[in-house]
Amino acid sequence: MTSRRTIITVCTANICRSPMAAALLQHALAAQEEPLRSLQVISAGVAAHDGEPVSQNSIQALKKVGIDVSSHRSQMLTPKMANEALAIFCMTETHRARIQMVVRPAPKHLHLFREFLPKGADKEIGDPFGGSLKLYESCRDEMVEAIPSLVEFLRKLCAEES
Image (cartoon, rainbow, N blue to C red; front, side, top):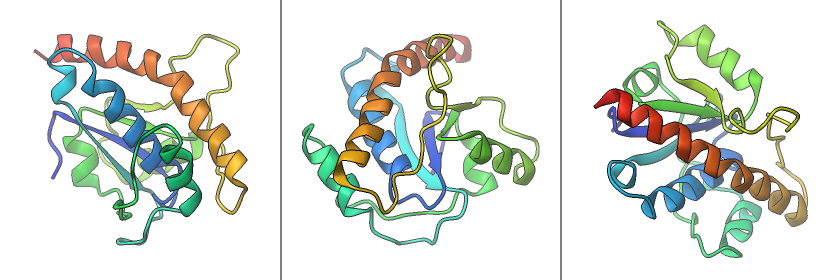
C-alpha cells in the first residue's frame, strides 16, 4: 500500500483533518513537475477505526474548492505504513509524539503539516470534529496556507532521495 513515493497525512480518527489534508496536497502535487506529480498522498489516524466515512463537513468544505473526498474511508496508521513512507505530516504535536512512541525506529521525515511556515505561524491544526462548516472551512484554509511550503520541502526531499 505504501512506498517511498507515498506521503501520509495523519490526524486522530482519519475522518476530518487528514483526509482533507491528503486531498489538498495530492491536488497541489498533481500540478507539479515530476517526481512530485507521481507522489501518492494517503491519510491515516493514530486512533482510527478502519472503514469509517469522512465527516460530512469535511466533504462540504472540500467540495467548495472542487475536491471530492466522499469515498474516503478511515484507516489506522500502522508501523509498516509509517516506515515505508517518504514523509509523514501530522496535524498536532500529540500526533507526532504518538507516532514516535509506537513506530520504531521513529520515521525520519515526521513533521507537522504547517511546520515549514514562517516563524510566528501557528504550527498545529485544531480538530474541527463536531464543529460548524465554517470551522471546517477554516481548518481547510489553514491547510491550504501550508501547501506551498510542503511542496517546496518535498521538492528538496525528492532531490535528496534520487
